[in-house]
Image 1 (cartoon, rainbow, N blue to C red):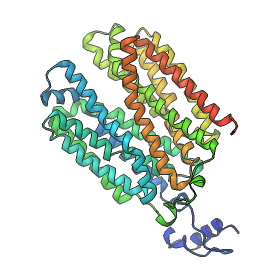
Image 2 (cartoon, rainbow, N blue to C red; image 1 turned 45 degrees about the vertical axis):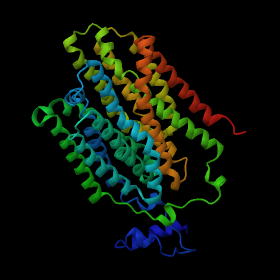
Image 3 (cartoon, one colour; image 1 turned 30 degrees about the vertical axis):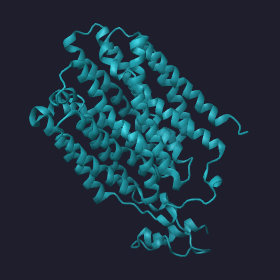
Image 4 (cartoon, helix red, strand yellow; image 1 turned 60 degrees about the vertical axis):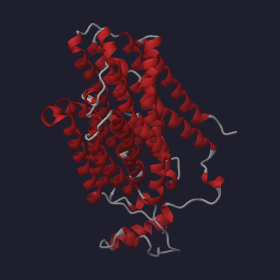
Length: 437
């Protein structure tokens, strides 16, 4: 009888015993065997998933709800020039993503060493405090620095991906990561809507306090309900042989291709965001309706992703994540091209919604593929690099889109982005088929 099977029989015969107690029992036919991290946390992964979904939703809602009134807050802090307001609003907004891109690998490494739950608590508590402090900013420097700190110490959604990706069973990992992605997308979608009306009732500064309180609720739920069986003696082990710690050359190519693809996914989605209002204005929309239509078009992508994220995750479980990744890259590039030829704003909204639907299959499938390519004790660090790549794309995308739009033309942004996604599809195909020399 295999040790893992014997261990499960012991647990079934002694239902009153915890996994911590049963994991050290002697198997029926050999020396003591410890279950893997995923096996020991099998009883908890569903509950942890739904707490992480709620936490990702609330934290991203709080971070994104300042979008509608961020320029107004910048003006309150002493900036009067319209050009300076736009410039500093962009700096303050991007500071959070820049900070997260820097520290995500560090938090992933600490998750491998000390457990996933402490990283969730750290992110939620830190973000709750910093979000409230943003409402106390006295000048522009404090606003930018606090937004940067929120990214440096935050990252609840990133920590959730590490926990769910390492705890969910292999055959359900795609679906679980898809559900988690849906919660994050919903937060990004609902946040600007909440930010559009909440300052009317509590004021701009009061809105930050409300956001901090919402994240504090997520922190409390994480402390009370998230369960983790983490054993530093085995889960945080490190190999002595450096060469043995590295994945095979084939897997290294796959990981690099996936990290580049993750960056390009966010780059593709964000490349047009800074200039989408200008683009809609060129489509003949009256000036007093441009902002409203731009909001609808921006929300269409997130809404489309919400509809298909979990479905694509489940599809990756059935047919393999690599097929979903390559297929979604090609489909997204195809949907991007006609966006350059629209004549009405609603045509752009429909195409952006379709693009969101095809993009939704990428990030959960990439996380699933990386999770199953690296060893358990390196999974948090590698998934941290994945988050860093994503947020890098979120920072670089608007910069590239703005430069192309200013010097070449707005429609050229769609062609360049579509070409980059096709290159990523070819890269992923090459990484899996080229023989190792």
